[in-house]
Image 1 (cartoon, helix red, strand yellow):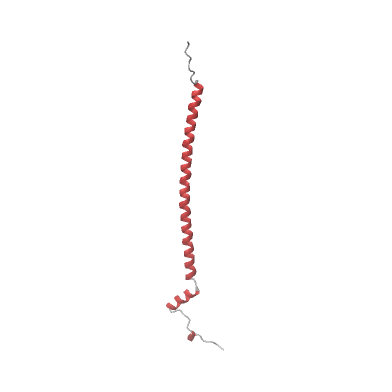
Image 2 (cartoon, one colour; image 1 turned 90 degrees about the vertical axis):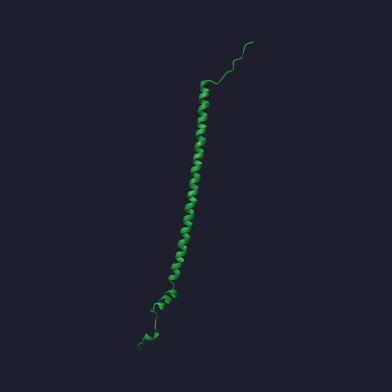
Length: 95
């Protein structure tokens, strides 16, 4: 009986197999790299959104404080404390 020779892969088949493995490895590494970069950008975006919200809250509270300080009642009380209040006795009417 003759021994049957096992046919191995040809050179072209081995080259295609190895090159396809290399391509798959590079694709996997690329996907992992890009997903990591996207995750990092999402974290930075969330941090920036928190900073923006904090700045908006600060601006809102400062605007409310400005409105309080600019109110007529506040201005009159400060002027009275500084002695700048109206004194009706000093006002003369001309008839």
